[in-house]
Length: 481
Image (cartoon, rainbow, N blue to C red):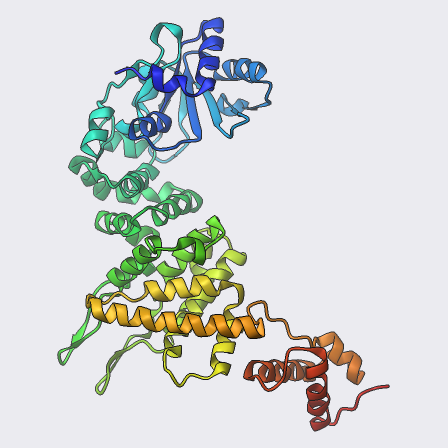
């Protein structure tokens, strides 16, 4: 099979051919770019392997392009970026060997065959020639093209060898299966279940990166189910496994919260209008994490009541308190991204309580204030949380959410509360009453905030100041001149 016509559509390859031939260096594009070329998927990352110095070839290509080259001397690699956003990495073909207790390989110069042998999966081990003599020619020693057509993930060498070299490849197998909707070849999957304990030598950061990619897959539940059945989920995310199972007492049972959560995650991933709920593309990952964690505290809060059956009172508050610890353990960011997930977990039951016709404007205002700019994400999570198998029941709940959103929209148009900041600040209170920092200032701020949310005081200086002065008088405070 020859890809010369396809490569011609990208001028970077003609330039690499010219420089590789000029240097007398055999060169190949290899790995994910070739896989995505066959699958007709867009790709911005190009890996070029040469039999010789990858750094020298990179510098020659960079000079011809007029772009800087970043050299990583200790790894023998170099990278450049083209004007149209392509990232091209150059490396010399390598042979690698590993010690059983380490992820650090012993690296030596090698042949193309050596380089393809060390690749993780057959679909990532295909190469295409980048010299004039073999331009566009597919080099596919492990029948990766056949596996792409069969939709199968398989290791080029025996899976025990491949996974022993780098245990993270076990998660990568599952990640590719989830991203591409492929099956994992039975012997390969058996090796994952057999060798799962090798994951103990992999850093939490690398595991988190793969887990994030699984969460961002088109149907992330598929990846989680594979992680569970392989025994990996117990090792990397045991809190999630605790959700599994349904318990019955006196004929009363609860849903299996493991599979419910996975359905919620899929619902978020496949919602009809993702742009509305997550205008920032990166917010999408954290919205999906909120789906993963929204019921994480249900095992800890599960109780059986003879009158009403199973309850999970307070699971939203306990779940929000669990979020930082889970993020810390998984080496996920502990910044505003974690706080976004924490907020959605804490608030995910609130919109459900607002579907009643008798709901007050103050309850709606309180949700607008508490959710703030994250209201769209919260509503997307709440819609996804409807997982009944009864179609009519689902549609009824969704229509109720439509009503809530219309009410919230109308109220927001009138009161502008999503970016709510009370006009009465702590500094203004201290200045008004001649106070130093004290608990009284917090009490007065809270009183003003509640009055604004209740709708009895407008969020303007002119409207709120008389209320503040009256509250101050109740506490024996007088305005200073």
